Structure formats: C-alpha cells, structure tokens
Amino acid sequence: MVTIDRGDAFDPDCPTRLVLDRVGDKWTVLVIDALSDGPLRFTQLRDRIGGVAPKVLTQTLRTLERDGLLTRTVHAQVPPRVDYEVTELGRSLSGPLAALTDWAETHVGRILRAREEYERATAEAARG
Image (cartoon, rainbow, N blue to C red; front, side, top):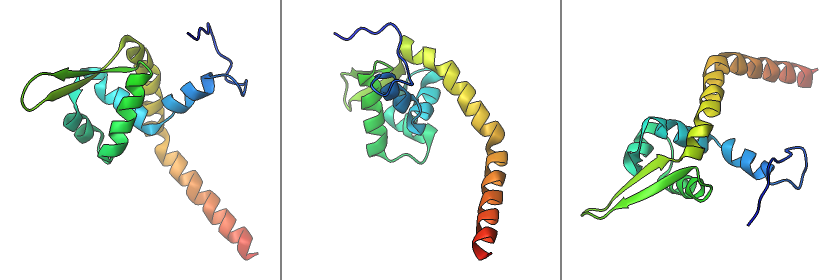
C-alpha cells in the first residue's frame, strides 16, 4: 500500500502530477460539479453536463470511482438503476473546482479577447 503524507507537484516523479491531471480534466470538473447537489443517474448526468459522449462519460466515471472521488451504486431492479454520487473525498474537491469554474466563467470574455488580439498580432507580423 502506498502512503504519502504530502506530495510535491514540482517533483517529476511524484504521483501528485497524476492527481493534477485527473482534477484538471474538464470532464472531471463538470462531473464533480454536477454531482455536488446529490446523486444522479448516468442519463441525468449526461444531460446535465451536455456535449459529452457516452463513452467519454463512462471512462471518466470509472476513473473517478477508481480514484475514490465518487461511488457507483447499482440497484437491483428491472431495468437496472445505477446512481453516481461524490464521496467525502470528492466533496472536498467540490469547493476548489467550483472556484475554478467560477473563475473560468467570469474571465472567459477576457481570455477570448486576448486570443483574438494574439491571433491578429501574429497574422500581422507574418504579413510583415
């Protein structure tokens, strides 16, 4: 069993980088946020997120379950019902991800304008 009290993200061999890769993924951010208000079924989750392919959502959910950020509960009924819910560890991630999402929504206009300005300046420089 691996036990690490605290990682070092600047150490290229530290597994913290794997965690950052997981929590920095847009689908992780959206899944954790969507589940922050309570459990959802796969279809509800897919509809809430919007624009995610079922295969990608399935892969994301499996990875988040493996990492202990959510649970998958199968209810014995016909048709089978599966609910997804964030764990305590996943809930501890909700606040930081909500802050990141809020920052992105607040600054998206500035980012898009900066991109346009950069592309325009790059195009002008290429023309000489």
